[in-house]
Length: 196
Image (cartoon, rainbow, N blue to C red; front, side, top):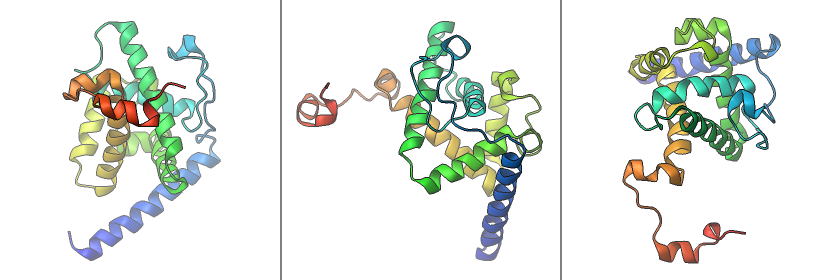
């Protein structure tokens, strides 16, 4: 790809995402943070307050995480649901730490995936996210990962990175990566390891 086509793709992608985000916002698709979600409905801790993810975003990640971490999630259904829910909460916590420009770009991506016309057109996912099977989510992720369209590749990379950090970055999953955890002297010295 030469410089001119790279710039055209970047500008075209920015215009497209801006249009989608505006359309989704005007249609009511872009929603406010979910704040509190019923523990019965979501299998999450009802005391957690979402500060970035909307209810539609939560449904998106509930569909994608089992496909991303198929071999790493617990087999037992309740433990599996808890692991997915805890990862979604950590995704929300992580995004809140991003700067406003990154949050804005993620909001555009999530709106694109939650807005039915663009979800069908670009992701080729016909059902709404709560109805998507793990194999359908996996097919979507593979299409975007292997796409020759840079914008879709970047969308896959963004989704993959925030999910991987939220899942494998938690001490409950360190053993899956072979990471033994921080050395004892680090735990004793650094304040972030102190329980307050």
